[in-house]
Length: 506
Image (tube, rainbow, N blue to C red; front, side):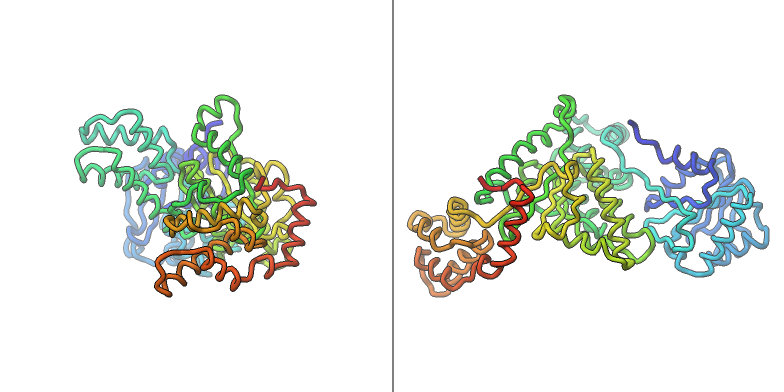
């Protein structure tokens, strides 16, 4: 089903008499154009701090603000609009920009409430707030409906690139590169896309495959500026994981779908939702998230749930919605949520924070259940017992894997991986079998730490080669995870077996 445009949505809500419509965007010009298209012939009275008050009729300015009103504080503008009758508000759309600077002022809240009362009593006026930041005081929460300008779709971006090529009279771009550029631009606004096209053009006078790096760098900037998501540069591959063969095989099968999304959908394959990887700390859960992105050949986004929390009503939920919207716009991608159990801690609490977390949890569950976009979620958890049971119901994740302490064969692979990475020439002279016997109960992180410490020690001792004895000495001075966390690990293993989660290892 095709998405309803913002213009149509705004028009419907205006006709229905909703008092305050809040457009969350930094693209003011685009928002203003949407309002003009949605106004249905109504006059528009627009205020911003930079330009003061303007009256638009039939999309043209017919009057600037009267007298000093153009530079009055927002409070004074509202007071005079309400009390002095400078303008007849009947049948008008009131547009206020950069509203986030003012909605925490008690006088502004009171005056906006007074306007809403008049609207509810029969005044034919709609208030439209435009802001790049959502700030809603509790007093206005029930009167406000939030809207967002959707990111451009693949075909729209493709048309925008073709328009730019024609306008600048550039050499034609083949369809394969055009598709690649359009996919790379996904998640960026029209403003950002136009700027990057201009930058690519000024560089060498044409659009080439080398411009993809510029687009990727800009996308990384966008993610960083959001403050919620982080784009991770992936160096790890599936081959860097020692063991966990069941999980790796499963991910490889999902990669075939992700890499051939259109063909898979046409064949009737449902879009993969994601995987929950739970289990022992230091045994490769986070590494799997990175390896999945590498395997799928898509960007890796990390969602820090702690950054979602905001102090204003609806801000936390909006931050989650913004993160999901951004991930879906950039898709196909891997969305990594680390230590999921900490993200939804306290959902049964009675505090305000607990209520917000419960709402976030509900929104996240709904998205996971209904998600059709190629955003592959990799959630990791150390303590699955702290997770709400609703999260593990069939339909949220495609599969839940349990990662335990590595077995003998896996420890052998992990030793080989970490030694070959750092001292490949010494690997053939080291008795891996003996190291495996002496490292019973060690996690993957323990083994990596042992190898790193042993190499650091021989460097400090001015030795020229790494030996089996060097690593054994380090093992003797290391307490394994099974020693440090014996009781919690036993309890955890029992829980995973009782719940019959799929083992990540063979």
